[in-house]
Image 1 (cartoon, helix red, strand yellow):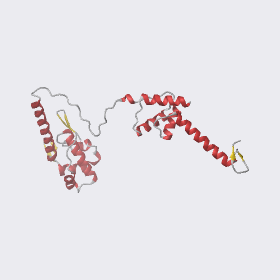
Image 2 (cartoon, rainbow, N blue to C red):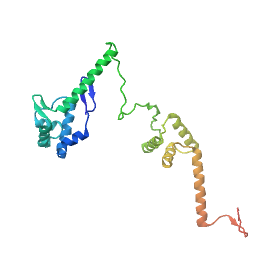
Image 3 (cartoon, helix red, strand yellow):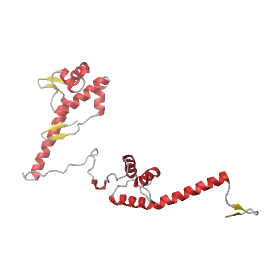
Length: 235
């Protein structure tokens, strides 16, 4: 809902919910939609709507609901020589224009008639901040796109940027562990590790062997010699 005004853009217009509801409570859903779209069209072009009802209906994407559009125009707009006008919208547009002109005069007065400096655009809530993309690391050789995308998501979830230093550390540890880089990254994704250490893999393998040995002894019996006094002695 933007209104253009000599280089300026009105990014919104005031919408009074209670006032609107009290005046539109008897409208059908289609008529209510038509009224909102007509207002948007009015503010967008900052002037009365065209006189042709069918043309207006087509402009707001409701060409199949000409009757509903006509009804709303008759209720909330006035047909003039310039087109369908809305007093409330005209007042809001005039107010906006006055603010813009007052701002220009004030700025010109402060700068003594000199050309005004170019202002740095203010970041809005919906605007994504400009970031330095140096921390973005390209997909390493030998790593599939699937594994890499999963690793990127994991690092983001832990607020950890994928820097050159971080990746070189993981590559070094993967070589130390004797496994491909893709296997190291896959292991990070499976276990929620933000990084990788060769010693973690060694520790995990030791635990895995101990568990397997304990399971085998449970099934096949203890391979160690059991003395007559009840103590277990290594062979």
